[in-house]
Length: 464
Ligand SMILES: Cc1ncc(COP(=O)(O)O)c(C=O)c1O
Image (cartoon, rainbow, N blue to C red; front, side, top):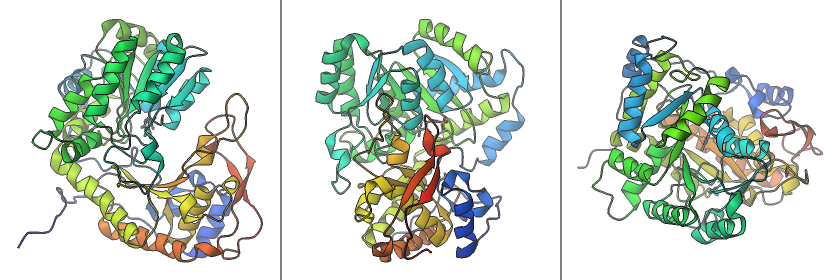
């Protein structure tokens, strides 16, 4: 008999989490102005807000922390991380930063100016924020298939070559680079194929443009290439990652994802000239070149995490857990982005709550209902996150309204996934009673979703 699948690690330390009552949760979410970011972590039972910086480090990573070199300049930890980055990505130069958005801030300070146009595949919100903050425009060139959640396509993160060429033809002189997010978070943790990366490289070369990877989940992307792309089944994750990076000139990294650390990031690149220019901003915003925004011990943990995060057995354990939750939801006929992505389940909130107008924030309403139901915290990836148009200041309504349930790495068991699935099923069973959503009371001028304050529109039959 074939043995069942089990995790590629065992547990050495545990953290106690607390359950709560429905009445407590109703009170807490109201006090948090219906913004899940404002909840205290002990008001949450299962926290699927993000997979970023929420993973469990291994015994080897903790050992590496003890070996950190905290010298201001020239620390051995810097060189340890340099070697790991070079071995895994092939990039020769790198700058440590305190997290992914800091890498964007430093790099874009060199590369983006007002009026520029930056094409890519569903830019992540901080990426878009850093582009728009510089009065430039992010143009989404993701393939159309990504916007039909029920359509099965192996690489829904792919860039549409025709859309990309159109942007380049129309704005050639204004395009500083093309950015590709692997995997593509905003479209559902969906991978980009090697074939697509090769095609984008050809187009970039034709127009003389650099390619930047937003590489936070590059290892999960490599895992999907291994499983889904012809000719890659026999290759190791590291071989695939090396090939992926061979099509890029620069990468920004949030190490809080596939390097399985709680804080950290970096920029890596091939060209010395860009390294020198970016170093100036790194010193201004982050810290000296050999530590950026990081302590030596954290750089050691990232180096070790990059090796662990590119092990097939680890990735298989991780992605199978995401799949486990997704398949449970599919069996309950809950609409989710398919195929199931790498780091999260993206619940299609407009199909879940079709009777609620999008102006009342369907995905946010669903996130709040799920929290009240089971103490599970997800996050809205919809109209709140899409923010206002920087020029017209009108609300932007994205094609897809998602509730994202992001799974932290090596943290929860499949029993927790069952709790999440059943809680969401209970909400699904009473969805017809969810007749009203939310309106905005207060919002920040940019990246409003983090701090927005909301108020119920009318009375929700079920809740009040
Ligand atoms: C694809 C992607 N890029 C960039 C970032 C920003 O990274 P950080 O949160 O480390 O600033 C994130 C964070 O979630 C992300 O998912």
